[in-house]
Amino acid sequence: MAPRIVTLPGDGIGPEIMTSALAVLDKVGSFAFDERVFGGAAIDAHGTALTDDVLEACRSADAVLLAAVGGPKWDTTDPDAPRPEQGLLGLRKSLGLYANLRPVRPIPALYDASPLRREVIEGTSLLVVRELTGGLYFGARGRDADSAFDTCVYSVGEVERIARVAFDAAEARVTSVDKANVIETSRLWREVVTNVHSSEYPNIRLEHMLVDNAAMQLVANPRHFDVIVAENMFGDILSDEAAMLTGSIGLLPSASLGAAGDPGLFEPVHGSAPDIAGTGAANPLAMLLSAAMMLRHGLSLPDEAAAVESAVDRALESGLRTADLGGSATTAEATRAVLANL
Image (cartoon, rainbow, N blue to C red; front, side, top):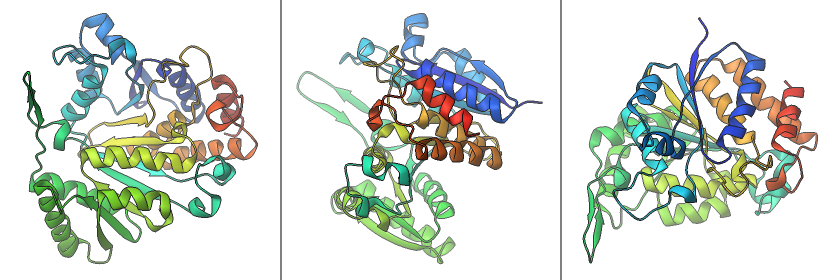
């Protein structure tokens, strides 16, 4: 039976880059796609970013492939108004997707597209492991006329499981990022990561780094890093910073994983880019690489994943450049270039 993939095109450029991903997936295998409305599009249709039907479909799927959500149409400071991002947070929480993996590997053909010098980024290959279901994004919050609060909470078990993901992924070193000189949850984080390292992974090197220093080192010496593990907000910020090592956030995929056997969520790091939606100018490569991560981590198809990744690399080596990379290739042209290399 063909693996069942729930597809969530979402908003903005989402439907356009999802079309690209489906074309590539159809070239490498046989899959059953189940398209659902999600994000801002779901707010318009149903008044909520994530309906119960869509959540149930995702729970029963083999994997979930998401393009992008959000846009100025749904921006509001009203805490009671639905927002597209609530659908994404709700999906992550409901599916138990506690580990977000964001690989960062500048492609040699694009070294000169990075704002950093070639000699700084050359040879960089790192993975940001972000804890995805705890911290400020999910803690108690509130506001009144004069103040607002957000609560950051982590348990020992939450830190242990994300630490294990990081150590399992590491080749040589894990850099655990925190703010233990100020924040109590960071002190717990550092203690727990240290305990997991000493008891379960003594052959992997562990270093602790304050988040402000980590932000500086990412642009000063990115080759230093192997695996970076961080709590939810720090991981969110650092992974977007690391995106610029590649020259464009339009090249970064991600995977959100939970317990073994449960469906994962795979999506590009970039947003919905409503300013270019409908123009055919969106870079689909991060979406295609997210589909490759789905093949590898979600469907256990490593050969097919490698084929997609290699086709993207070869297309770029042959001169493919979308607008964000300084070229003029359209979404359709970029997709055809990758398909030609499969």
